[in-house]
Length: 297
DNA sequence: TCAATCACG
DNA sequence: ACGTACGTGATTGAA
Image (cartoon, rainbow, N blue to C red; front, side, top):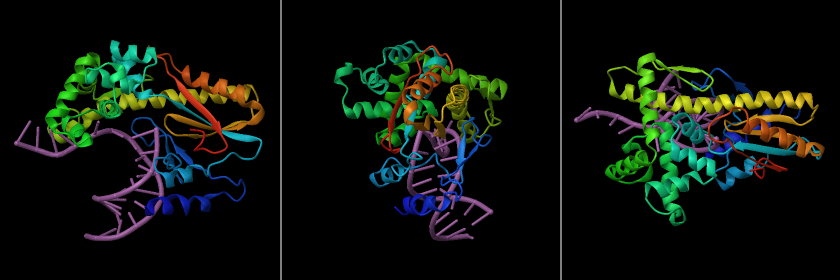
């Protein structure tokens, strides 16, 4: 509990710029191997939200004055939508086209129950599995996360691949591509080189194989939000908006929104993010406004 | 200087 | 049999 105080409460006020009255972060464009941005000095991509005390820190981020409010816009499940699109798995595509809760839909499939029979625990497990898929899952890793025997974890994973068969073949193809070419690439052709993909050390090779699965997914999400940011910048300039983009947090954009531009800005932001690229599944964006960052979620 | 820890997506 | 979920940055305390 020392972390919240030393990293945020004590440090951030010291970083308010004397001239602007704002905290200014630096975004690094060539640090993350997948093509994500990173944020330093201070890092504003890891402002707390998960604990009650942490949420109070996030609530301290406010608009510049009474004529503005904060707008937070975030992609819903962008990485799973990308894997659905890249793998062309019919079931997962169908789930996203129908707008169903993907974790609940996954739980229904994996545990073989009706959608309305999915309880909180089943959904929670299915959510962990969905995340695991993006990261390059192993039975052992899932068993640790879910605190269940490895055998049971393996059964869940086997069931997952049975219900979403093309996710499995897509993952195998990503690894095969990497082994042949020595790199993997995103939807916008950003490459991540994986020199250890054919290595003889199983631990190192396993790491590269998980990178082969994860990098195109995480990197494509980064490509998409970057394109959206460029499109939004152009629109704001053309329309002479005074609202400003403040922060990017991987799948979220935060704006200082002028009160007389609310509807126009929200339309531009939603449209630019949802249509930054055309996938075979819809991209959806959730957004909200408030007088602090916490409540804009 | 570096590993461990903890903050986020 | 092996060792194991992806990507970051800041702080802390031991070496």
